[in-house]
Image (tube, rainbow, N blue to C red):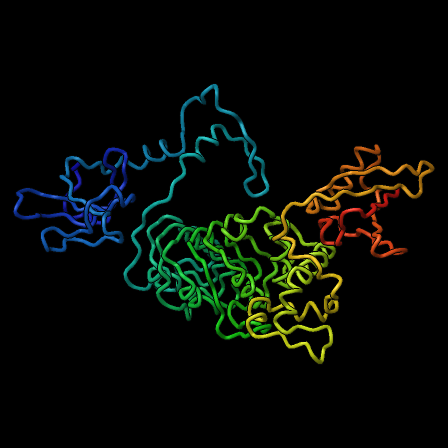
Length: 465
């Protein structure tokens, strides 16, 4: 066993044919004679059982197929400390010719590094053994503010046991530990501002409620945990939840979110200003990514940033107007009315669109003329035959063009810019309709499609610059 006695191997990290594991048992496993080591593999697919053999439990694994019994002579217990340092950080007498120099900043001093790319590629997380009893709060990590425990095998119970030793911790990273949030932190983690629980697939919405009252939690990263639903039971329609009171930035990338009700619930978070939710069925399933973005903005009223892109006031106004129009017919069928005295949409509609009434107060109830078309995201890509005029030009020649009704004003401007050799920023668009003689409608929002403005076949686009 590489000069390692059987008495001090429990908890040791080992390597077998390139696979890493932790020793959980050392001893006899009848009826086969001789000494065996019971190991828990980092890769659970590498093992065969959970530490049991013929009804006897020799050790325990977190995964039912992560355990194996191995003869000691097949196990590599590693190398001495200096050799490990040299192997890990590629310390060599002479740098290789192909290695590149980089400048990195350590503190405020520039430092030249050689082979830094290869060092980064070799970085890996360690499987750690954590204390079984609470450490003494004094003399431990009294000034620690950032702690990364990704892929260390730590459990939530161990986090809470150790956390008394991190009295001022602000950022805690717990990615890929198969964590189950089993209890609510009461006297610990009260200073944490950022918590990363990414790739812990066993976490569900009920477990999240156990961390919902961390008073200073501002950033919560929940990427790739498999979550599909959330509901804050303490807040009704149009109300704010008392949960996650300080949460400003929420990351939900790579999950299973497929229902708009999820976004409705996020509007209940009182401090939420930034959201990332890429690669979810809700955001990836629609062909019209712009409409999806608009609907998220319209449903979460206090949002300032979506998927790392700032929401300008003009975009919010356009998104909310588009949303108000898109569901106007549904609102009317549910009991909505332009007359405030008669405006009583049913509970089913209000549950599906909790901000709709607020948008009607903000912009006015939608008029019948706005609701003559179906919802934009359900319309097929129809071609419109339009006349195009240039009112402020000497040449008043009228041309005809076929344009998709889903084409945005910005793209129409781009087309005209190439045609007229005029910068997009100088173009102003409006249109006239035979149905509204003498009235000119300005196409003021570049992000909206033509169908938003009810442009129809035979209408005339007016182009000025």
